[in-house]
Amino acid sequence: MSETLKAVRAANERYAADFGDKGQLPMPPARHFAILTCMDARLDPAKYAGLAEGDAHVIRNAGGRASDDAIRSLVISHKLLGTREWFVVHHTDCGMETFTNDIMAGLLKDSLATATIDGSGWHNTDEGPGSPEGRYINWLTISDNAASVVEDVKRIKAHPLVPGDIPVYGYIYDCKTGRLIEVPEATTAGRPG
Image (cartoon, rainbow, N blue to C red; front, side, top):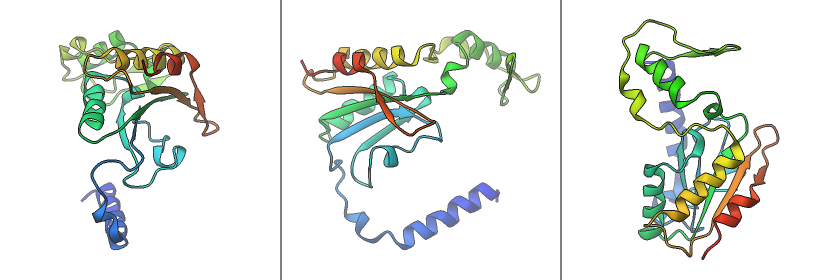
């Protein structure tokens, strides 16, 4: 058993020992909102948004991007579980800013092993095997953080399964300060209408 697995299992035992009445929480989020944000380990939506179990839906993916699957989750969050407001939260120093679709496709073509980055860019650590399948995916990389928040809010609002009366707010989490910084153009684009 790996050390990581042991640590996770031990932490879960401690958590479950004090679980209390959390097993009685209803399925719909009590605060009726959802957050779409990045999977980056430095972001803790429970802390930066003041959440406890049962408060809100948190949808996480690389970059916090409004992929088809993220929008699928938001639609379910609203339609079946009653969320009425959504937040798109990207962040500073995001790994999605460090590569392009072509770089990712090239890395995957040559090797499926973990790559490394240095001052000259991304590099594979071995010679393979790889797969050409990476070229068929839009990795939704980021070249301008604020612009990507605006793009994602607009993509959500334009989706035919998203009701027009749901406000979608756009923010960037500052990894150096812990502050949420509004992207006004995104929030404007996300107004109910």
